[in-house]
View 1 (cartoon, rainbow, N blue to C red):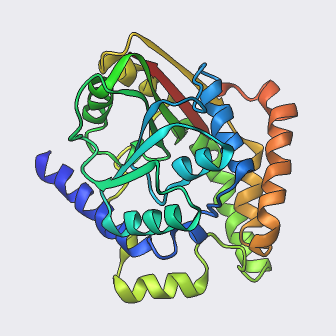
View 2: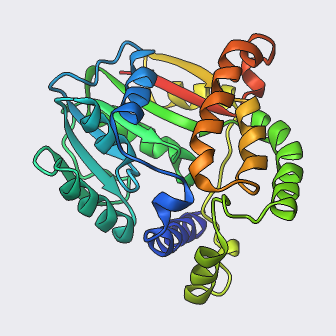
Length: 290
């Protein structure tokens, strides 16, 4: 298991170093007040006020989506960011300087399963769209609990939900292929030029083992309690918007994707969330209080 764990970590470093130059384009990551308000809303669901002068850790921070958008929203928090990929961090640091947020955002490279940070220090730990990358995810969650102050929160955001992804994926893959065939692929999350560049750097990046887990909601809740948190709850979202995104990303230019996805997400909220059970929705937020 130790060797498997090390391989997953090495593969994640390789993959994210390779993707770092294109990462924001691949995942359509942008920075601004509107995007920060979405992050703030996800946190406020658990009663977390990220606008205050609190100490936050964004673990597996990527290119700084959480920290920079919270800052764009007006947060006064001091945000520490860590990631296992030095390539990703270089992009994040450059962005923090470009947007003028370098004075109260800090960046360092580490293995998030072994955080080199003192205990009982942080008000909030955030891990967005990344828990499934950790081969020893409970170790990370225990480390998060260790560094949190009493009453502090671990917020695992936008974690893929296995049951929901299986349901969405069956139709989503078909829609994606249809979109690529009918359209020009100009809206693809990984366009042809990017794909070619990555293939030149690494012969077969598709074989990298970077995502060892995909959790159900119940598995996430159990992990929270196993890690020693006293209060654990979830919020599951998105269904129809995933179908729309899978199809449209291969059919339309990227400039249209954001608006289409936003409208589809509104349809999720107004309609699909009323009859799609939470266990079948595509993503889950997990909130764990120390």
